[in-house]
Image (cartoon, rainbow, N blue to C red; front, top):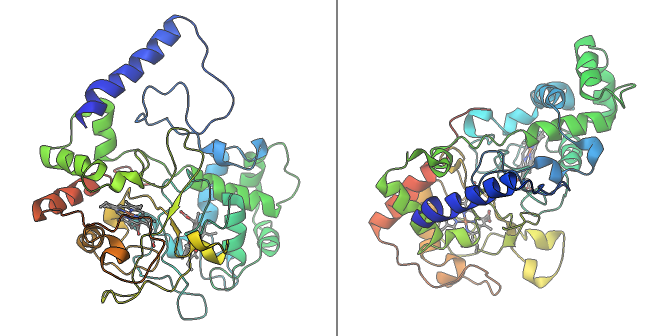
Length: 360
Ligand code: HEC
Ligand code: HEC
């Protein structure tokens, strides 16, 4: 922490300021991180439009307003009772508090509902990385028979009966608007998700020079980046699998989440292998962000862990392989971390500093 706040951040700010004084222009081609941000921890560092399918999908405030209304809109669902917010509740950092979400006709979905905060800043979506763009993800969810079981074209017709919606679509798509099309709905929902990156946690304020983290929280950050090795997969400052320094690709990892707390076998979900059947992807899952993890229990793709203490004990013992469960391709080192009770407590105090204070 001292290295970042006392050396790296001041150096990065000074470099930008010298560049500006000398009149050297910053690059203008679209990149995931902005050339005119002061440091890697500045609130404007990421450019979510980099992760869109093209310029016509770029963000504007009117698309966010429309997308937010659609996010809560039950017209998108086949039974007229569900919306995105049913499983992505803003008061739980856009999760639902369940190990696995309720399917529309009873039973459960295959996986746990992830947070949507910072989800835009990933090369691909879903635990198995099956979808590249949020626009495609929106179609997948609306038309999935277990999730919303609706139809975008039918929803477009129903929305067109409401003049307040027509006005919002016209404002959001001033050039291409003629009538409400599926693409407009997909892009508005995606743009709303691209707006969900408040960078307003205690950690963010600290990294922006405000000295708000206490000594134990700072030690927790140092453990996260050091002895506990969490930062080798959950990359700062997003703490997900989007890889520095370019932040253009997102990684999956094999850690061997068990099917239950008895730790006898690895969960049967094949992860990326289901989409890409090569052996190294068996049980590989996209590394999720740990921002707002205070609000997103239960944890992992199957919701097997109820508390952060359980998550950290799992890592402390070297994942599945460290517990001698059968798993040949684990990418998490199997050696125990040998964290003390005090160290585990500080790690959790640090994780709690990643909770956003601005509610979206
Ligand atoms: C029935 C519950 C449910 C509903 C309704 C729902 N989702 Fe999800 N959502 C999930 C689950 C479960 C996953 C994880 C699925 C997986 O990884 O295979 C998910 C994943 C996602 C992701 C991927 C995030 C990531 O980091 O990979 C996005 C984005 C998303 N949902 C947005 C939406 C939007 C937009 C809507 C409304 C159009 C919506 N969801 C409706 C349960 C739901
Ligand atoms: C080898 C890469 C790797 C390392 C090292 C690692 N993680 Fe993870 N982490 C992952 C992956 C992959 C997942 C998702 C696994 C799944 O759902 O099956 C995950 C999931 C999580 C989750 C659950 C998030 C949620 O919303 O469900 C938490 C919390 C977490 N990790 C914290 C940590 C901490 C704390 C450490 C350090 C002690 C750590 N991780 C080290 C790869 C890693």
